Image 1 (cartoon, rainbow, N blue to C red):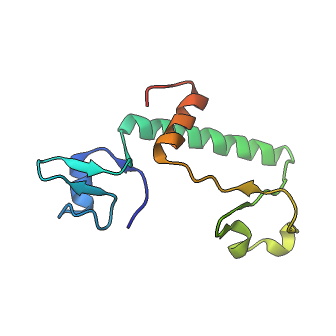
Image 2 (image 1 turned 90 degrees about the vertical axis):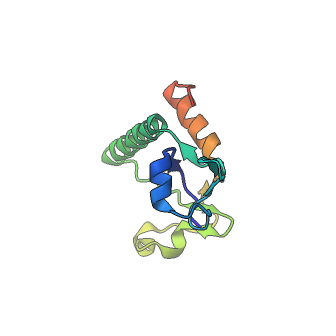
Length: 124
């Protein structure tokens, strides 16, 4: 089952899973022309803030790379290891014991709250 953030729009959700059983997406029809979601719905406005945040992060990353900052900090945590499938292992030279980014498992709400706080917006 998909584990992502969905647009809070009944038409979009109905088009994604017409029977409303919540088998493929984390949203179910509640039988009263409504939906029951597991903290995975976001407004179009929230999606806009997310995309803006990601754009800024990508620009910062590109500027950092252009400025010569090519440090490597792969993501590791739990069963995830970014190095496992990386095609650049031989060029990277990353070794166990070196600093790395820990995988953060946070809820959609906490991620959106973090974006809002960094962007100076607390509207949710």
